[in-house]
Image (cartoon, rainbow, N blue to C red; front, side, top):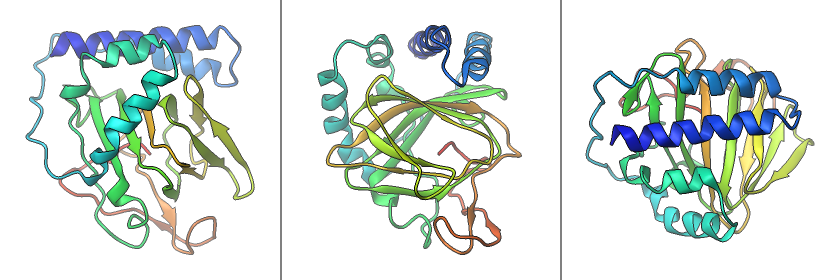
Length: 231
C-alpha cells in the first residue's frame, strides 16, 4: 500500500519538475511542492483506509477514468493505477446553501496529508472528482493549490467572475493564496490530482453574499474532520 502511494507521489513530483523547466508561471511553487513530496517520511505507520461510506459522486469515477485513459499516455495516470483503490474518498462538507449545488457530484481523497493514508503535516496530495455539468461553488483559501488534470476537463474561473479558462488533461492549474475561484465541468466528469500546503490555518471559505459577491467570510461546516481539504 505505502509503496504504491510513494510511487504516485514521486511521479507527481517528477512531473512538477518537468513542468517547472518549461517556465510555468508557478515555477517556484512547482519546485517547492516537488521538494515537499520527495521529503515525505515513508517510515511512519500508515493510516488504514476506512471503509467507504456512501459517496454519491463516485458514480462518475468510471467515466472519469475512461476519459483519462482516452487522453493518451500519462506517467501520473500509470502510477495512479496502483493506488486509486487505496484512496479514502469522501465529501467532507456538510450540506448547506453553498455546498448543495455540487455535493452529490463531488468526491475527494487525501492520500498524503494530515488526514491522509500517509500522515504528513507539510504537504497534501490527493484526487479530486467532479461530475459532469457541475459547478464547484466559488471559494478561496489561504493555501497555495495546484491541480493536475488527468481526465475530462473544466473551466476554472479565477479572481473574478468574467475570467474563465478551460483546462484539459495534462494541464496544471495554479491557485494563488486567497484567490477566489470556481470549477465548472461540461459533459464529461473531471478527474485531477491535487496538492496543497497542509496548513490547518488555511481552510476554504466563501462570501456571505453568494458566488462572486461581497460579504463576510463564511467557513463551510465539515463532516468528521478537523482540517479543511483542498478545493
